[in-house]
Length: 163
Image (cartoon, rainbow, N blue to C red; front, side, top):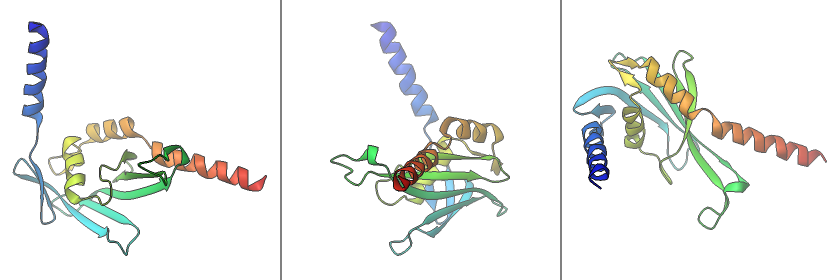
């Protein structure tokens, strides 16, 4: 019992220490009081079907482009999600460092703070540049599951359509 209590306290202490204060002030992403990047939104309105975020360093260099994507997956249809819509974020890293996709944390509209929190938690930016190791880990961990699934569904629809 003491061992279990010690492990629980250690995990709580580690989570508390690694917790970061992430906020978006204007177009600046601020982590623990330090600006790590700027964020610019394009679209992201009811009249605009697409939402794109551009993440730049303090020199204005583009680091990450993030696009809100969605598709219909019949396997995801249920009482809560009758249409089967799957919403995800596609991260494209500058200089061909890779692409990764994650489930969109927002039910409806993604906020800049949601994007900032993902970037900060994943430690993608360090000293005004992309952190090569963390970007590689992020790309390897997340891959392109959603767009792969969407292509798979498109291929199956084409096959069924031609029969």
